[in-house]
Length: 449
Image (cartoon, rainbow, N blue to C red; front, side):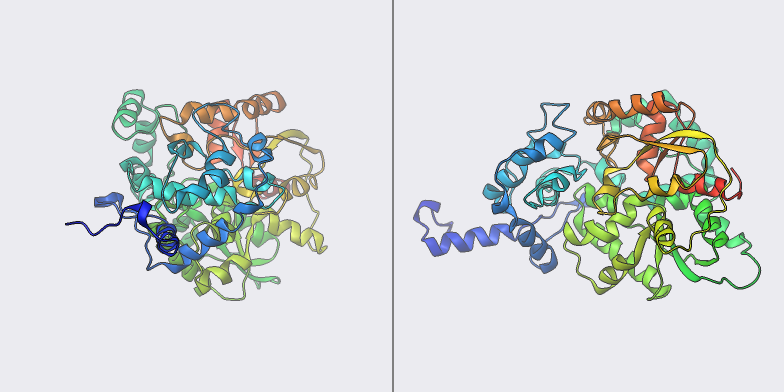
């Protein structure tokens, strides 16, 4: 016989306790390989949720967040950041009340635009983790296994690339896994960055500027290997000793798909690996989104309060950010070769929420002859793994369409962007090769194309 009381008969004190208990359910468990486990045993998550919820009452329903939302502008499937964010959060009590929330791309532009400081995107990410506890597609688990993907594809790179370019295989992937047949895919490389680094001959003699730690990220380790190589070679040209410690994934893909428990373990392990390389060293990363996970998302969204993360996050710099710090200190050499070219530049949403501005533009404009045209767009649509999913692919393409047109109109030969998945999205949707800013710096310093 059930002892559960009728909600109408609860006293005010009992209702408050019930609501407090519900709010602690940031997420619940699932079965099998799709497990999401966040519970009362994880007080950091609860503290982060409470901190984000504390911003609710600052919402004045001005709808500025909705004017900034790229998803709401292109589809009626999403109710908008205000509706599924601060408005719905008041009624969730640890549960999910509106499944249109899943169409939020987590671009973070709503939080950036909010004049009242409401943590809209952070609240939505937490609520999505709760919602996905009811139904976590196996696809969302698989696309978070980025290191595994790289390890499997690298030894068979030509075969893997041919398979991902094969239409029947992509159609089968869409039907079985749920990854859209036309979504951008990473290009497997025959050599991982770690393999390159093991055989790389460092410049002879001492490094006058001392050591820095390089955090390459999963994509930079397996798919964007050239970007990682360019970064190391530029840093060494500038006089740094580049330390590449053993390192795993940052957990961003897991976090963005609601797999908080796995992501928390992943990012904490990574931070300890990076910290072991030297606790006083600057950590440089050419993966803007992975740097953002360390600097912002792991703590603000998942509530990770581990000392290793706190330490690592304060020392992490995106490559352009780091180089501009040198420039501002008057120590960046201006021995640039001339590059007569106009290039479109897109600052990814995952870079903007780090609050660093757009250092890549200032950096690239130091190169004689190079003109940089900023896209003016908030998001390319891919938003990490969002645009890969078959039910969201058309939304992602609609979000990025103005950007795609701008890129083609500005320079159909080359574009510049700071994060990997955004580069893949732009390249796939426009046919325009898209590189990290460091690749142009590498070229301008005469280190190769």
